[in-house]
Image (spheres, rainbow, N blue to C red):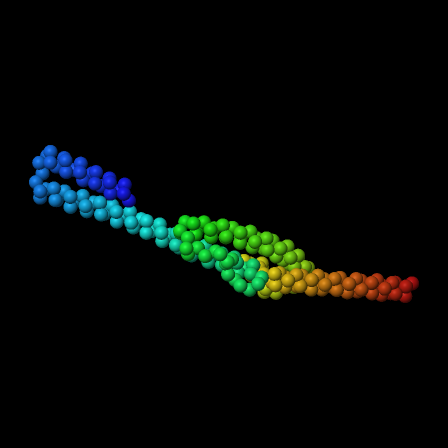
Length: 195
């Protein structure tokens, strides 16, 4: 700030020296200073508008990051709090530092959700394959992994559904094996009677 004031003061003194040398009247000097003041004000207002825009973009980005972090935190929220980790209040930080802290937290949350999504994906793939073998449709809760509910409780529902589907597969295989044995037995009887 002092540098700007010093620069402006230096320019004004240089202009006064030139105007003295040229011989501008008091009215001409006032008009020149008014024009210079208007130009300087326009430049400063343009710079202010630009910086306000930068600030507003930071605020918007912070709100978007908070919303994304909250969504990610809720998706793996096993204890039901659904909130950001304690100590992640960025309201007292400079905007750039707050945004950086939120980006770090988002990266951690994305890693946690990706790890959980991978767990879900492996169970879901096995459940889907089993369901297709049985010719059954998946329940709505298990139809896709998604991003919004990656809690351990839901993963347990996926695992129970897989267990039930696998058990049903085994039961059907056993029934089919029993039917095949019965068919073989009956075939043997029919073949022996014909002899």
